[in-house]
Amino acid sequence: MLNYLWLGLILCGVVLGVLTGKTEAVTAATFDAAKASLMTIALPLGAVMALWLGIMRLAEKSGAVERLSSFLKPLLTRLFPDVPADHPAMGAMVMNIAANMLGLGNAATPLGLRAMQGLESLNPRPGTATNAMCTFLAINTSSVQLIPATAVGILAAAGSIHPTAIIGTALVATTCSFVTGIVSVKLLQRLPMFALSPMPAVTISTSSETVLPARTEPIPELSLWRQILLGAYVLLFGFTIAHLTISGQAQNSWAIALIQSISLVAIPFLIGFFPLYAALRGVAVYEEFIEGAKEGIQVALRIFPYLVAILVAIGIFRAAGGIDILTRLLSPVLDLIGLPPQVLPLVLIRPMSGSAATGLFAEIVKACGPDSYAAHLSGTILGGTETTLYVLAVYFGSVAIRKGRHALTAGLLADVAGVAASLVICRLVFKS
Image (cartoon, rainbow, N blue to C red):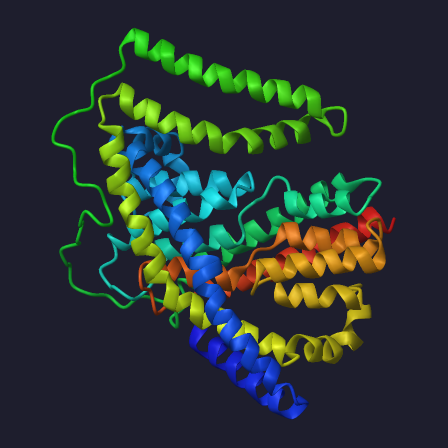
């Protein structure tokens, strides 16, 4: 399906550019997108990947990932029956899902790519997505986000009276999107057109590039004084979260203030916790961090061609006026579903580009007002949907998957569900 979608974006963009006289804009967008894929995304992502894969290496070597995944083993084994319960990918997926829920995108993407590497080590068909990969991507493209921090921040900066009013509506929308994504991916994998053909048993590679070698010696348990030291570190951040929550209750409810406090503290806590935990369990933290960080640049190089492909196609289509033409064509049916015309471009661009969707949201807030129905609806959509095409390009590109099977379909269905739920809940809340 990605083949047809990519080809359609390219051809439609080129033809529209010729017909509308925007060939110069199409040319500029092509080279700008190609440059941005490396300079704006791939290289910065490589640096962030180096940091988080180093941290993940320490988490795995110290046994923290195994302990973390054991708490959710009953749920994970149902969602991912083809993945061994004690596989390193399980822990990486848990941490990725938690980071997505807290809105920690800088941490979620590297952790997700680490999980994809682990899932690829179990893949007997290199180049073709497994059911576990498709399920994991469905979770990522529809992940429940507790607070849409970006949308709330834009509303607050624009002077909204109640910038946090969209938190509840966005949570409903993202929950509907999540449920739809999971149900869709499980049903679609059973269809003949997406089913995996049977194949003889093969020896699965477990190279050191994707999965850590099995430990030959058990990791010693923490002594009493080391447990006390680790507990003191956790208490320090616990008190910090409590302090921030109490301070934040002046502007928000305690639940929102608590989630915001955890989001602020989570990354510094994790960056310090895993090296400390690994050191207390006898791991050579610096050497192991370096080994994990080496993978970061390698992953960035692997995903670069996939980024060029998807960003150039999207850039050509936008520059040629494809989004504007779709908006005009679909305008007659907008009144039937209660979607303001100015919100439609955001709905169309959201699966393609997160930064472009954020920019459109800011324009809607400026044009319609921060407390308008259009602003509330577009903020809810921004918080309840995901950049499906970008996520698929980055995650599949990191492990050279060319046949994504039903992952794109499930992701787009989740986006449709998120938009539909946003329309219903916003009409009930903001138009009642």
